[in-house]
Length: 128
Image (cartoon, rainbow, N blue to C red; front, side, top):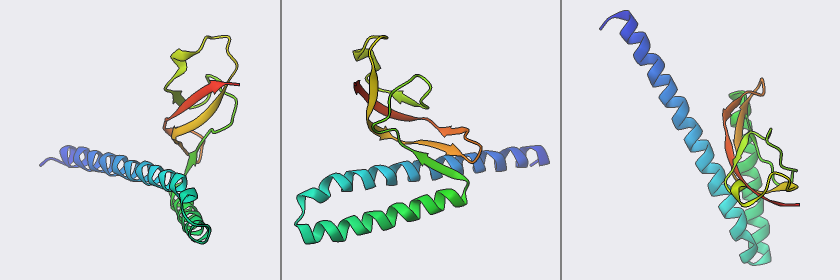
């Protein structure tokens, strides 16, 4: 195999590895948020214990991302503008003059240390 083909293969492998890394991060964030919705259904003692576990996991996730110069960004409760780096899945339900806010982050946006978008998330918007 030529040197150029080897380099192309290595670059493709790195891109695929990074893409898989992002998939794992996003899926683990979804799992965390799903678990957070279930915790209130538990008894109070179990709620406290599981909320501590969630917080521990979230801190570790943030630490791992920071070590890769990445950050998860959610927009819950923020006023919506077209400049938010996330796709509103229900924007067609509203007019251009509607005053909107982000009701829920479906998938977070991932940015790098320079603020560049690595992955654009998705959100649900609602009238303010």
